[in-house]
Image (spheres, helix red, strand yellow):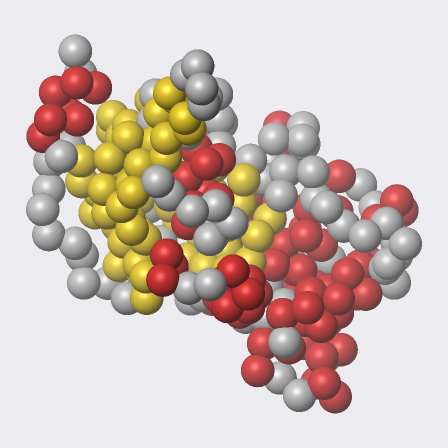
Length: 253
């Protein structure tokens, strides 16, 4: 399979161009990401795979603006993230990206509904007036199939139910992109596939879902994706993904 390409898909919501992340200390130089270029089609279920230490989580942090690259750029709907200051970037992230963590990260003293309401508070309400926030939160819980647990605390829920609440929270401000870092990594196989189905359904609501996974079965369900090895793209699946020729030669040696 060829990894070469030059022209981004015009439907791409995210463009990652010649992205590198290098950590330099007095004794070492560590290359985390090495000249990575690819495009995420809008509305896709996009998988990022690869072994531990290949740069997956670092790449995800770059795409959400949590970390900044050493070089290269990321364009989100045409807007370059690197040009934004930290405060502006935090506000942007609250409106444009919903994040789902492996270990849920729910506030244990808040109910499922209150966890989603808090996300609305922090993200500015997703364009909704405050009087509509409760209705919006309940809609999000319903989309994640946990509306019946709205008044339960996280400790009263199973792992799969907690992750569904976390998915509902990620939808609170109606972001166009949902990013999930090993969202099923803390769940048993059956529950993992049920939770993944919930994520998949979000693409039918117009969301672009980007997820990191070690699970080959879940990765195979992606509509597009890339595989990383030692910070480089070494494979792609139905993705508008590119890698420059010199990096391809090195990665296939």
